[in-house]
Figure 1 (cartoon, helix red, strand yellow):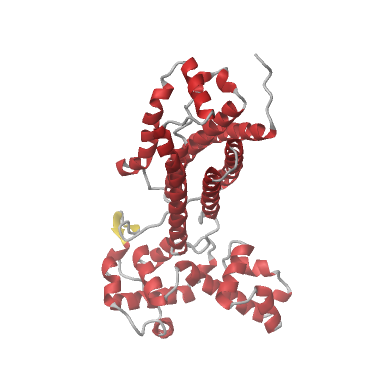
Figure 2: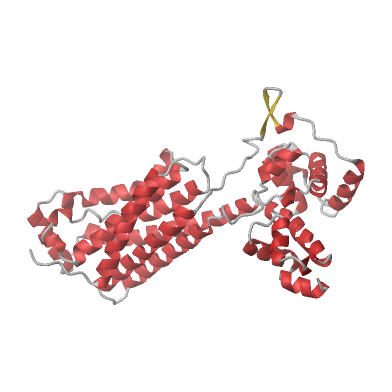
Length: 413
């Protein structure tokens, strides 16, 4: 057998395939959030086979090992569904694949059936078919199916981006610090995947050669494998929050009760009056129907908002960097869904903006008091409940319209 020589494209593809195989094994062994990790493992395995097939064809190995011909053909139709389903599973630990989700793999089944006659051919027949394909003799059914590969990739990339954007909004409705749960890396990955599919589509309909198309797309895919391997494995946490359908459960004298079964904790009258005054600015117009889904009447919503502001002023829970909507709802002895309704409907803010507003005002107070002269700005921000410098800067700019340094200079702090 002649000595095998690989160019740098083929080496990059082969290295991407090896890394993809290792990642697939590591992800499959993960014990946390198994649904998401198994889906990502399946995606890595698919990438591995596809990248390896690129080397198989471009290096001319088909003439020596013809029996592997066409085995990778259906794989591009599964890339998009796996990315989308992984996004669903990574954003919710309780999400599972059901029968409806299996419809996402219908194109894979169709293309596999289409490739079946080629898979069952003898080695000599496969070599002959490959030679005809290279010469431009493409069967009509393959010609019809080929464009759907690109349509599927682009459509699923767009669907994944749309889902992750909605997820980001839900995160801000439930977390006060979102860096560990926002899946921003996955949003960028989905956008990158959409870009790769668009480039592949443009190259397909352009005058560039077949070799340029396949190798450039495969190289981009190899780079994505490296990116997924780095970001997917370091993602420490996924998004999961309690809703009205899954109320906060407390154990009271050995009996499990929901938060709604318990009377709200009493608060000082002076604090109630102050909080009620602050709430009046956001309650001039109230549509009772807004709270019908959660069973929260207009009066109950007003009372819950008052209690919320009292607890925020009295107990300063915003100092806790990992404060979540469920945590705060538990303090108020209500459900996260009802609290979210009040924040969005009456206060007009997400949970993220509401809590970080208190943190920003605390930082402003301390800067004005002169603490910034003896402490670093980041130390003050961490004391106020921020989890990182980037989150602090973003929240401060969003709340005040200026950077922390500019505010400090303006007040002489």
